[in-house]
Image 1 (cartoon, rainbow, N blue to C red):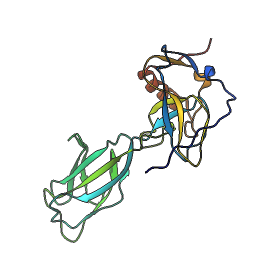
Image 2 (image 1 turned 60 degrees about the horizontal axis):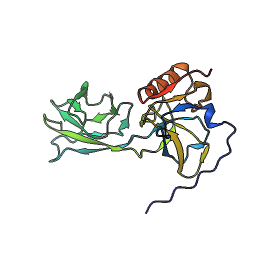
Image 3 (image 1 turned 90 degrees about the vertical axis):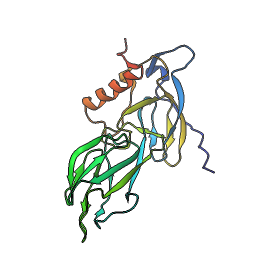
Image 4 (image 1 turned 30 degrees about the vertical axis):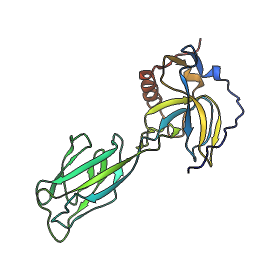
Length: 224
């Protein structure tokens, strides 16, 4: 049985009205999200991202391989999908990577050379060469769905703006349930009332987040 969420406590130097300017009748734009333990003290107005992908694990394809080479550590990069990526050799040193939807990504890869696309990894050749049809399956786990500060440098899904926090919470050492602005109808927010994570360092980062929120009908407008 999982650990119960801690009850959130806060004091609010900023009012909800400084962030949320209007919303669909009935508060249908609001919901509850889980702020991930370790996120620290998160202030009202913080733009949040959701953890959508987890770690990746690689195994030899079903039936095994003729070649004895191995896959090194796998990095999950921006744009990665959850599910199984199939690495398949077309020749002794050449392979292709298919994403979980069956699309070839990244062009041809080669043993001994770093592959970088949705995933990053290097396949080392072994004492016995690979043959066509050899390969590996790399499974990208689903993320926790918990919320952290929007981070344009991340690669776990939190690089995409998801929602906006409506109350200050302390998630330093435990998950905390907090009220957030979601995408269930048009809501207007004030850019001046928003807070940003440490890795949001440029206006381009902020503009990208606001553009994503706008698609979710969370619309930024300047205060009158």
